[in-house]
Image 1 (tube, rainbow over the protein chains, first blue to last red):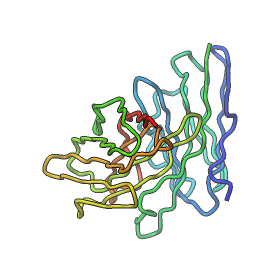
Image 2: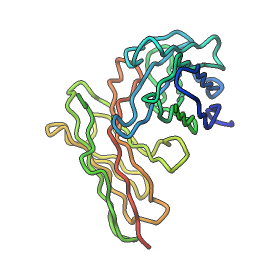
Image 3: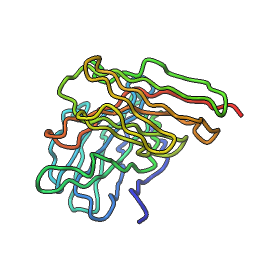
Image 4: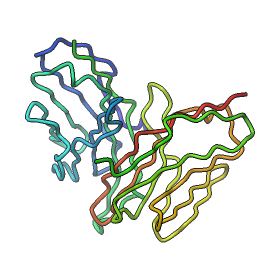
Length: 119
Length: 113
């Protein structure tokens, strides 16, 4: 398995531009997470999906952020318009959660991250 | 409010010695705890975990200890190796609430040859 695939690995954009980050989870995983890592706040959960349905988006900072999961193998995180304070590394992670609610030991597998710089 | 805290941002240790990383949490509902390791330009990778019904879990050179009354856990690496140099994140979750992990701020470990 190629693991969790994220693109782009690096993105530099100007304030006000739209940014779209992409994620392909591990095949067979049914939970997908978007995390953001910054120096000030560390790793913070933005949103997660179970079976393509958003379950908890309380970590999404504001309406400029949106996430979708149109199918089990693809998710996007969009920022529109972007601001310099959005500069961070954005991680996507996936895991398997069975119908009884037990997770594969709650183990998330992370992608390599997308480093975003907003000028 | 940080529910999971790693108060030591960095740790330097000699190769062959023990590395001890600490983590404190405030949410008494947490019942599952994990440690992740992160190298530069890579995502965090799972290292070891422990359920709240246990107080110790060991996997090779890595041992995690849980003190529920103190809401404290620690990761011991012995012996430390240069390849262990990385950032280590403590994470916690409430299993009944799903697989949402809350992470600490990380501790950067440097193992000197």
